[in-house]
View 1 (cartoon, helix red, strand yellow):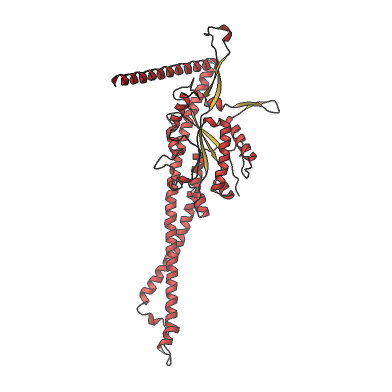
View 2 (cartoon, one colour; view 1 turned 180 degrees about the vertical axis):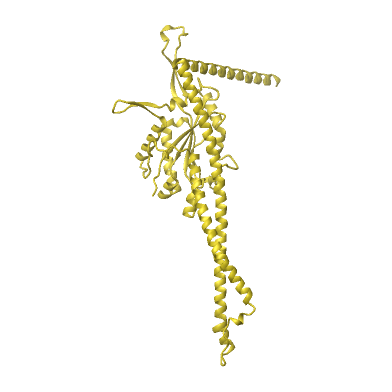
Length: 420
């Protein structure tokens, strides 16, 4: 039995980019790029949390309007949404009871997500039960679905707003003016500096700590037979797309072998069938040559029943047997060729997606390197101060834009009332 690894991943989205992910998570599309989505099984998806009729962006706007969260200090294109994806090998659920077990498992995972973000900051939590695992389906001979959980949440942290030096009362300068619930991905998922037994300091990435908490929570809740995974292992850090490329390639190679074996078997039997066909065509009109002559005292009825019919039955059974074999092989070859075509299509799709992800990672890496160079040249304090000033300026402009928009709406309402 292979090892089952529990994985938690976090992806970030801005207001402009969350829509595509929302359509996938909430199954709002009619067609899906993921060829394995079976919409006939979508009713089995489980919503532990939902925005109802509102979109993710509309729900966020309402929370901002109600004062539940704040975008203070953030750029207009800042990453505001976290999509947390919880996943375990498909085989894990098949070994423990399938769909019902997956529902119980991910209900507990949802409780973990609530603990991480706060229940009030989770917009959606959906367990997908409609994505077919092609490889396991072929192996087991019945439809097997890959159960996983999508949680969309806001990374909210408490931020203390202090009185500035411009405050009229000198005694208040530096004191806490208010506490706001600010959306901040970087602060929510900040890495931690720790000191080991030897006194050496090193950084532990926030997602590694998340994996630890997730694993410990599920084990404490009584769910076992899965592992956290080895830290630093290559397999653990494979992206979802890269993993699917790997699996689809393996599946394709397996199908190639099966298809070649079927072709060899078919090539071997085809001459035998053709030989049988030629034999019948050449001898069916002179079938009496194959039959022994009747004895001098033998009756026609006994000759027919004891000699002619048994031989004809044998020939018929032999032909039917050969035809069944050849038809079964042809059907299997057609099925394998269809599976092979689908596997090629899936592999090419995931490979293209993986290449796009690699390009994005390369661009992000360049930005990180450039940012490091800027900090090195100008000094960390100056860069941080410049960034803080830029965020304040953008926040001020955004506030002015909202105020102007609000005034326009009020003016429009006044105009409409006067017109009536």
